[in-house]
Length: 207
Image 1 (cartoon, rainbow, N blue to C red):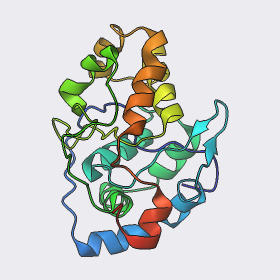
Image 2: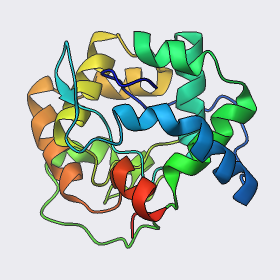
Image 3: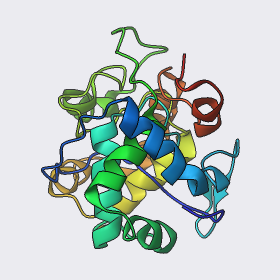
Image 4: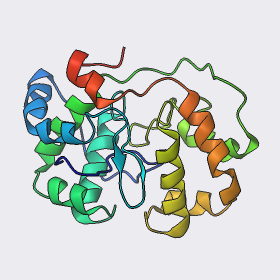
C-alpha cells in the first residue's frame, strides 16, 4: 500500500476464501500501524488510480472479512493489480485481518431505505448486495452503498472482460448489458454507508 495508484476491496463480489476476521481492539491498533502506507492512496480524498483512471475505492464501513479476503486475492494474483499484489503478498493472514479491521472502522448497518429510484438493471444486484447496496447476504460480499461511481463502473467492466475472475460475478455479469453499468453505479454511489479512509484515520469510523 505505497503512495501509488491502487485498488483495494471493492469491487462487486468476492468468493469467500475461508478466512475469519474476528478482530478486537489489539487487532485494530496493530492494523493501524501496518496500514500506514495505505494512506498514501486511500487516505487522500479523490485520489485516482491511473491507467485506467478511476477513483481509489472507499474502505471505511466495509465488511472487514471482505477486505481481508480481497487482500488475500491480491496476494495470490486472483485480483490483478501490481501495487496491491506487492503489498498484500508481504502480509500474513493475521496482518491482513488486522489491516482490514482498522480500515473498516465500523460497519454501518443497512437502514433499508434507498435514495432515488433503482434502475431496472439493479435487480440482478440486490439479491446479494441488498436494495440499498448495504444489506449483503454475507460479510464476504462487499457493501456498495456510497462507493465511488467510477470505481463501480470499472469493477463491472473488469468482471465483464474477465480481468477480474469470480465465478459468481461471471455468471451475473453476463446477463447485464454494459450500457447499464453507468446507471447501476450511479444508483449505488448515491446511497450513504461507505466513507473514505481519511475519515477513518481522523475519527475511527464513518459516522
